[in-house]
Length: 121
Image (cartoon, rainbow, N blue to C red; front, side, top):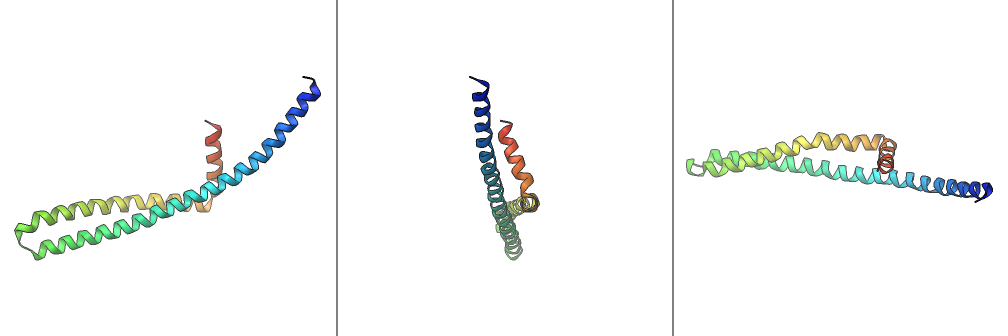
């Protein structure tokens, strides 16, 4: 290959790379917003799960108080399971909310992080 052909090839590759980079950036930003929607779903489900489990735990405690001792073990198990599940949902909530807020406030950072993840592979 002559130096002119090599330069022509380099110029062609640079023009293609510019178009791909522009489209890649748009796709990365869009993917960050897809992740935001996923985080929002997790936040909503964590809130709903925590509320439902806390309500079930409260109901199980009320039933336990209203009934005699022979029903006590069944409702204590239900109360324990609901309490643990409510705690798990409540524990997951701040982490999911943080991810949601961070991606909404600074989507470009997460787009760069996403693109650099592809380069490093």
